[in-house]
Image 1 (cartoon, rainbow, N blue to C red):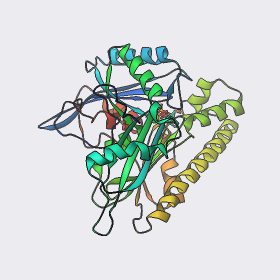
Image 2 (cartoon, protein in one colour):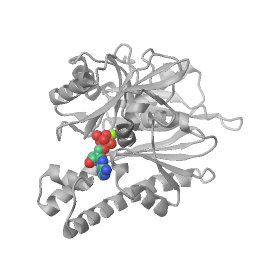
Image 3 (cartoon, rainbow, N blue to C red):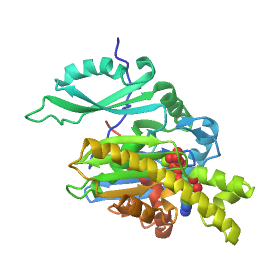
Image 4 (cartoon, rainbow, N blue to C red):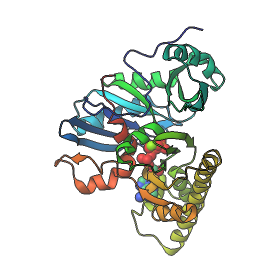
Length: 364
Ligand SMILES: Nc1ncnc2c1ncn2[C@@H]1O[C@H](COP(=O)(O)OP(=O)(O)OP(=O)(O)O)[C@@H](O)[C@H]1O
Ligand SMILES: [Mg+2]
């Protein structure tokens, strides 16, 4: 089997950060909104210079697949123009069914041997034709004196899905130089805030999926997406109260005062959904705990628009008995004086993935 080639200058990226490189424009194309983030990196550290988000039409992006490229392109183009962004080299990320992240355990090999072997190895784990995917991997070098086996993080993403993004971006003059995975971009965003020795679970609650990434001893142990999200809450409110989507959305985020009856119905929907999310999170933690009983997870780091649901952090803290915090991806980054502080504080939790992407160097 021949080795396929990624498009020129493109790599599916695993976490890592180069300190003094020109950085790509972080572009997170979610199913609810597009977020952009531009960070510069110099000898004096990093600075956030541009950031913003814009809502997408419903259905334009579904399960990580571009359904309406023209509409998405128009939203990205308008957002970049609005923010006067000049950087044309972008880092994007994938999620959903078309990307598979799998950790496999193999006997230690030389780099060249591994590169040759990985394709036939990957075939067992990927539910698509190997010729239809872009493949990348990283040796996590977990072999020890006692073990000649090492963990390899394998990432496979469907070519047609990625190509559709590249084409859409090219149409508005943007060049994707990095293709990442949501869960890893999230990790990248959090990387420099990790304080020694602790283990974390990063949870990004978006509109249609929850990305979970468990990090222990500095590396990702488990990365998975759960197909649940905050949009379900809006849909259920809409159905229950027989109202339009926009009004349901507004009620959900507390944008207007509610009658007693509405409030009870909304609260019930919120609690039901949050409980289901917590069950899924518990499953991931239990799976981890059974494999790594020694290394307890001590903190939950929440992000995504869904993390702004009032009381969710406290509920997680209570149900999972772990310290829970809402992530601010800019906590350690200097922020340009041109960016409104209140606006930034408001959007920070859902900018986590875009911020992680904005730390990717443009030159590979
Ligand atoms: N204050 C709030 N309370 C509850 N939900 C909120 C709040 N603010 C935003 N949301 C919800 O968060 C969701 C958007 O989050 P986010 O921007 O992280 O999603 P996305 O990245 O576009 O989607 P995905 O990652 O699932 O493709 C929407 O469903 C929105 O209604
Ligand atoms: Mg998202």
